[in-house]
Image (cartoon, rainbow, N blue to C red):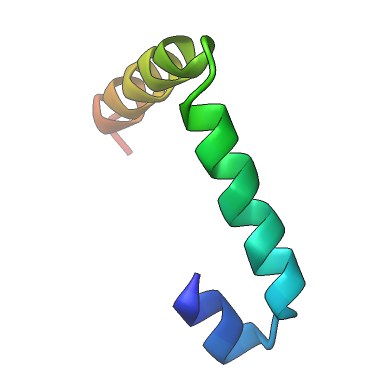
Amino acid sequence: MYLLWRYTHTPIWHIAVCVLFGYFLAESSIAPNIARLLTTAAHYIAGLDL
């Protein structure tokens, strides 16, 4: 978030909203499903031969 603020001049309140949303999303019951989805996507992308 610091880099986003530093180099794109994002307002502090945008960063605060993103941090709070991320915290509440991580504490929700859907967090394991999101983690599984991201892991599967990362494995799929890593397996591509470009």
